[in-house]
Image 1 (cartoon, rainbow, N blue to C red):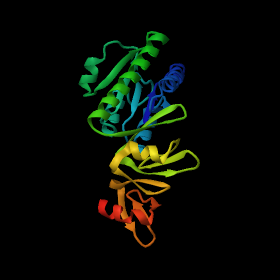
Image 2: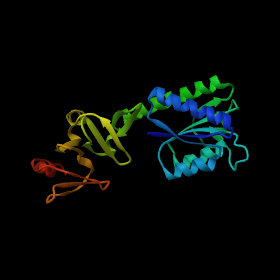
Image 3: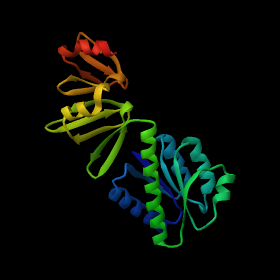
Image 4: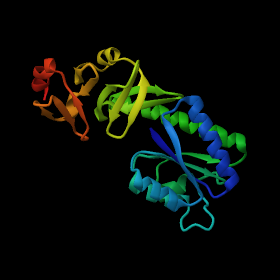
Length: 243
């Protein structure tokens, strides 16, 4: 899930952006979440440093009474998140030269002419980001897609440890960074995920590439993230041949 950050010093504009972003994420079922909205660039940098990863940043250019403006904030963000999506929301129309001067790659510039223009800009930015992410998925990594309530999540397959049954028609995904409960069946997952995953127990479907070690005596699998799950006696041979 892509975290979304807003840095805007005008409380009314910030509240408007928060509300519209949340609505668009819900309507578009985007794999995104607004995690922080603040007038202070230090708050944004602290949050990104504490939860490193790719994010989306809607930044005002003029940040009154702050030690840095939107451009210098963008520079600091780039040190923490080289592949993040930076969108400037500003009263200034021509920013291309400034972003070039600061060595910044901005996804878009939204001009604060009126609420409709800001809405259009936010909506367009989210659509462009989603399309870019889809292209990257096809070019680089395989993702497992699951819908949880009103949000569609895209989890890299190579970050999934295992799936476990969590009740009638419910599955729990155990990943490097996530634990997600969703409606599904082990049989369907086996067919969908293919040979990379092995059904080691009626309750567990394991990513073989994430296995760290086997405890043959207790018939237990230890995964690379430290979690454990059981395996059946009947799959012992298959496990040993795959790791």
